[in-house]
Amino acid sequence: MAEFQLYSYYRSSCSYRVRIALQLKRLPFVYQAVHLVREGGEQRQPDYLKLNPMGQVPCLIHDGKALAQSMAIIEYLDRVAPTPRLFPEDPWQAAQVRELCEHVNTGIQPIQNLKVLQRIERDYGASGANKVAWAKAWIEMGFEALEHALTTTAGLCSFGDEVTAADLFLVPQVYNADRFKVDMTAFPTIARINEHCLALEAFQKAEPANQPDTPANYGA
Amino acid sequence: MAEFQLYSYYRSSCSYRVRIALQLKRLPFVYQAVHLVREGGEQRQPDYLKLNPMGQVPCLIHDGKALAQSMAIIEYLDRVAPTPRLFPEDPWQAAQVRELCEHVNTGIQPIQNLKVLQRIERDYGASGANKVAWAKAWIEMGFEALEHALTTTAGLCSFGDEVTAADLFLVPQVYNADRFKVDMTAFPTIARINEHCLALEAFQKAEPANQPDTPANYGA
Image (cartoon, rainbow over all chains, first blue to last red; front, side, top):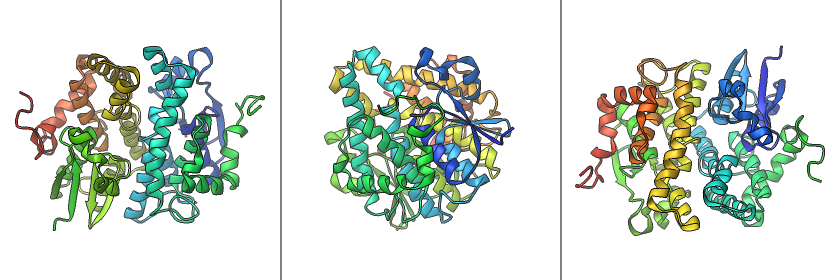
């Protein structure tokens, strides 16, 4: 049995973050697909809720134990498989990387995710276009702040020239931004870092386009 | 000049998390009040945005350098002032504590915070009662999952018998739950841990009721 299993959905940006970490660290893992939409969402089925009571992906299984929440998983992988490091050794530098991660992790993604969009449709009758506008507005506000924060930290990547955890949050959020039609020319630093990272093999292997559960007609 | 300054708002649950950490670690700090409502929100003023481009509290100043995002701040304080420890040394135990933190940090708080409530009022005409219902529903969903997760980790506190970072997220979220009229009898483990922690001096000093910017008529 493989040491790691990852419960994931191909276009979940939080799953995408963890897939990049696993690929960067060259950790083989079994991909367990969880379809977030089909049959009311496989993440809400009792067997899955035993692994993650929040009913969200991703969830990592390591040595038979389950760990949810992408930030907790990435911090954990950085401890048990520290090459390459995703958080710098220096406490202040690590704090700056965590701040960049959290701007996405708490400041953007939770407010534009599937659950919230389903809710504004149900509670307020938000149309499809209206849901896109909601998500787009939150991403734009968050990216404005992130773009500004990056001006003091970025090199080729979010924090200097090497990949850190901050890039594992940035790239999947840009993927969401594209889905919600955000004009990325307004965020040149974010766009440039995204492009740099997507040229790396580990990011490509982790992309939504290249997963076991990616639909055959993806991108068509 | 004091080593630490904390930009905070008395009833911001994210500021409250960091105040508990500072009190537990007995780190003296200067309290810098940021009023989130007055004059359109002091957190949106240019001087504050230089400290935290996301326009949110808390923000910690250490040796003249600014750090935003409560999770990043708490992890940082745990590195530079490690007594008492808020994250266990063991990587798996630390991961479990982080998972509990993140259930609140990303799963509940961001969807029920002031910015989102203002937005559903502006975009969908949500009334006062309707905003309370929105916040209440998200907290209840999150607490249902957190309550379940705690059954395998809790002792007197969220993770065993000693205070960890998980309690710094739980207690302020219960404070929000009270504001939004959540019936806590449905969440006996969360309620019990909250009560245990609020008997500790550090938590009391950090409470919204006891801050320099707490209004004179608070609780009246």
